[in-house]
Image 1 (cartoon, rainbow over the protein chains, first blue to last red):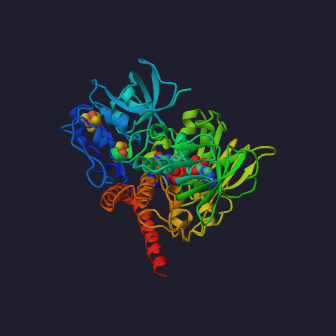
Image 2 (tube, helix red, strand yellow):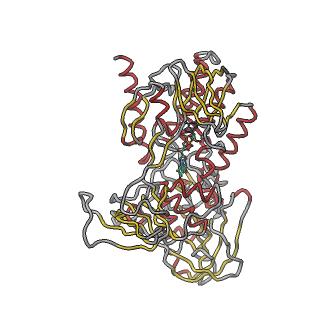
Image 3 (cartoon, chains in turn purple, blue):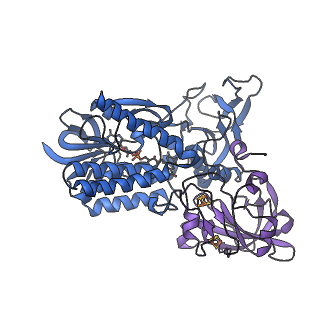
Length: 167
Length: 367
Ligand SMILES: Cc1cc2nc3c(=O)[nH]c(=O)nc-3n(C[C@H](O)[C@H](O)[C@H](O)COP(=O)(O)OP(=O)(O)OC[C@H]3O[C@@H](n4cnc5c(N)ncnc54)[C@H](O)[C@@H]3O)c2cc1C
Ligand code: SF4
Ligand code: SF4
């Protein structure tokens, strides 16, 4: 397997597909779902405890890798805001006919404005395509982690994970 | 001479947790810290912590620090700041330079040493130039004093400290030109490396820093690839423009006070160096002297807090504030929580090393 997490810092698609929580092709068709890119056994489980639908399981011991039941996940984004590893984003591949929508956690100032065009990046930080900001959510309970939603051409749905920092 | 039932050295997560447990049980406690602010490393940790709910997972380190300070205040625990502990005698007299000016001596029945750790350094050509600093120092400048240490930073070391400080440098507005790791695999949690990588920070795995370049201060850094014997591969050098080189190459427990107090030691490379041997109650080989946190082996704030509680409960128990049954229940509970943090691919080595230290204590007792 092409493993890159421990050499270049970002996981390869192969590595991700081998992790239990990563969606299969058909799962993407269910509407917005949480995509969890957490592939190492670290002692951590906020994703499990904050999910209001009980969709994520870590269990005992807390070093288990998270798993997710896509039937239960509503794509609300709470886990994405709470995960201390910033390892979860929400993806809706069928946002419009041609566009997907990604909602990712973001902790760099300044924030973009609604309607602004931003550069979306892949796991290596390379620019993939431009995207249109649909919303910027900062709730008090997210504690300074902001959720940014961006619409983009859907063919890039497996590549886009975040946006280029502004300023 | 002033008398206390318990004197705690260090007001970091371990020391404060220990003091809180002692005071909660009813003991009279003094906490001394050489810093002007309590909280140890916690007030630099602006990121959310891992763990479970009972370890305050998902909460930023600064807020965990604030909660500890509030509890310390609610229990009216006496805290001396700007007060370095510089000696411990065999009869448990503790020598302190109070407020950086007055030397004084207090008498303790029990002592808990929670002095934390100090950053390691590596030497290379140009390492004395301004602009070379510890990653922890850079973190203190940014997050405690709001000073950006540099505009273009090269990070040496890819453990959690290196990647977290890199992330915080990006947040503060600096550019991180690369993270250099001598080993063939990155050290930090994958979720942390992925976070800085998608921000465009390159990792140089199998590289080390060869030279800091600049006349009066750092203007660039030369890095070089290493072969399987850790030797420089000629011709593989790269020059990166940078005004700051941050060293995140490990921590060493601050054990001087434990030496002075006559504690016996064992060496553990995985835990950061010479470690005072202790038992499952965190008591060293000197009766009545306990340790907790990074001084008992480099781990994390979450483990430091549990160990601090363990030491605090044990000290209070030995003073008669708990009966055996109560104490055993509390201590078992702390161990359950500690073991949760010491499993999985990153924790299991620490668990093995910690167990070796406990075994060593048994061995030394039987000598
Ligand atoms: C960049 C970075 C990121 C980290 N991220 C995390 C994380 O995400 N999660 C996590 O759980 N942990 C994290 N840690 C680790 C964590 O900060 C430490 O493990 C923890 O602070 C150790 O607690 P402690 O109380 O043992 O020591 P410290 O916090 O270092 O406190 C020791 C205190 O003792 C005082 N002291 C020392 N000697 C004396 C003396 N002679 N007299 C008086 N006072 C003295 C010092 O001034 C200090 O205040 C991180 C560490 C770093 C550097
Ligand atoms: S997006 Fe909402 S429902 Fe889905 S796993 Fe996360 S918290 Fe649960
Ligand atoms: S909260 Fe995030 S880092 Fe922690 S286990 Fe869940 S996905 Fe992994």
